Structures are given as C-alpha cells and as structure tokens.
Amino acid sequence: MNAADFLRIALSLEGVEEDSHGGLPTFRVGGRRFASLASQAEGYGNLTLTLEQQAAFVEEAPGVFLPIPGGWGKMGHTHIRLAAANEEVLTGALRTAWKLRIEMNAKTRANKRRLPARGGVANNKLGKR
Image 1 (cartoon, rainbow, N blue to C red):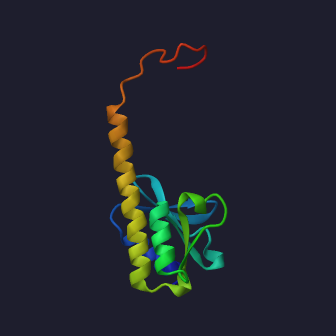
Image 2: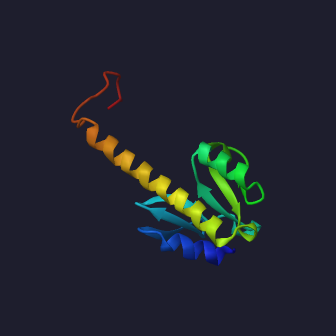
C-alpha cells in the first residue's frame, strides 16, 4: 500500500473530508481528525485510536503498526507502515479510527446537550464565568 491507497480508502468512508494540516493531508469526519498522512515521507499513515485499540493492532501486526514516538503515541496515535500493509489491513485500520471518531463525536454532542445553559456567573471567583 502507499499514500494514494490510504487517501482512496479514507475518502471512501462515509462523511469523510480531506483537509490539510501543515500542508499535509488529514482526514476528518464531523469536523474532527481521525487519520493523516503527516508522516508519509517516512512511509507511514497515522491513525487516532484508543490505547486499547493501539495495543491490539501492535500485538497482532508489529511489523505494520507502531505507536507514534513521544506523547502522541501515549495517547493512542499510531503509525501504520504503508508498504507492509495490505488492502484489508489498511481498510480495517482506517475503518476502526473512523468509527472511533464518529462515536467520540456522538458522545461530545450528547454531553453538550446535557449541560445546563450558562447565562451568568458560574463561579464566584473574580474573572471566572
């Protein structure tokens, strides 16, 4: 697989839009990012997963998946080695990240609906609303 395959598969998922961050392609659903090609020069695609999903992918296919180095990887951000992935693996990984983002978007919307309207001072400390 390569960056063009990543792009094609990501854009085939329902509601996905291509965007750009730092001049590199990102993929969003509901306005929020779930994947990118920020590391395509190094041969990677990037996925936003839970830590549990990341661990499962890395355990199942350590030659294909690895946590992004540093703090991002500790939050579930995961590289997929494009040259080592086949279509089924890449599609499944992108679909997992896409589905997670849709679920997270739904939770965020539900939480916002439950919050009471804040029409005045919510905190008695000076300068806090």
